[in-house]
Length: 385
Image (cartoon, rainbow, N blue to C red; front, side, top):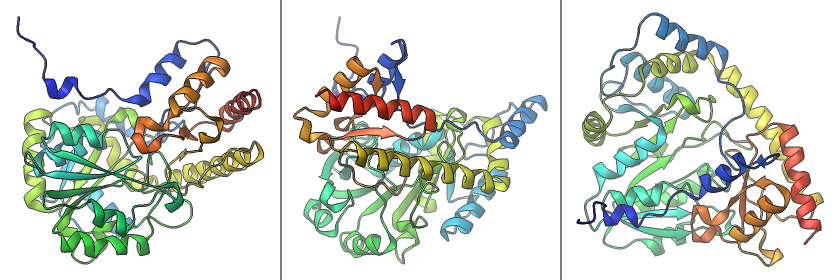
C-alpha cells in the first residue's frame, strides 16, 4: 500500500505544551503549572446567556461570518478599547478560537515560497500553520537582554525579497513580554518600506499590568496592512466556548470567510450569544481577573527572587519565563526531572522555539494555593541540585 499520510504533516512536531500536562494528569499528587487556561469560571451572566440560548432552541447555524449582533459588539469593543474602527458586515469574522483565525489568515495570504517572519519564543501554532499554508517560516530569535521584544534591527535583518508577513505575538506567550507604543512605532516604517503585512495576535490584550495594550493596527498606514486576532478564551475565561475573531481589510476578510465557510461553516451558536453578553456587561469581571493575575504575577516574581531563580519580569499575559540555564540542564531535562522528582509540570522553553532553550514556562493562571505548592516544589528541586 502507498503511504496514506502527507509528508508535510508527518514532519510537523506535535505541540510540546501538552506532553507534560498529559503525564501530570496521570500521576498521583502531581501539580501542573503548565497550561495557559484561566482557573476562573466563565462569568455567571455569560454562562446564563449560553444556557438561555439553548433553552430557546438557538441551535441553528449562524451566518458564516458570525451573528451580526456579535460582530457589531466586537466592532464596538475594538473601537472602545483600542481605537480601531471596523465594519461589522465586511471587516470582521467570528472564528473557532483565535487559533483558527491565525490558520486561515495565513492560508489566505501566502503562496508557496512566501516567507513568514515569526519571532520566537512564541505560541506554538504560528510555525506549523505557516508550513501547512505552504509558506516558508523564518524565525527571529528574541533575546532576553531585549526583554524578548522585537527590535527594528532584528526585523530589518530578517527581511528578504520573499518576505510577505510578519507575525506579531504581543502580549507574548510564553515570555509575558509586551511592546509599548513607542517600541511598535520603531517597526512601522520598516514594515511599510518593505510592503509587509502583519498578523497581530492580541489574544492577551486585556491582560497587561504596566500600561494599556497598543495595537500596531492603530498606527497611520497600518490598519490596511494588519489582521488583528483576538478572542474570548483568556480575558473572559471562555476557553471551552471556542470563540475568537479576526478583524482587517475587507479584501482579506472576505477570503477568510470563504475558507471558514468550507472548513467550519460557523462558530458555535450558543457561544456566540454568550459572547454578546460578555462584551456588553463583563468589563468589571475582567478587571477583577486582571487584578488577581497581577497579584499572582508579583507573588511569583518575589518567590523567584527569594529562591535565586533569574526571571525577566512579565508585564502581559499570565506566564513567567524563568531562566534555568545555570543549572547545567537543557529545558527538557529540567522539566522532566522536575516532574519526575517533585511531581510538578512546567513547559520547557523549547516548546516555543529553539530560542526558548535555557528557560521554562510557568503559568500563573492558577490559584495562589496551587502556585504556593508548585513554587515550594521548585524550591525543593533547586535546593537538591
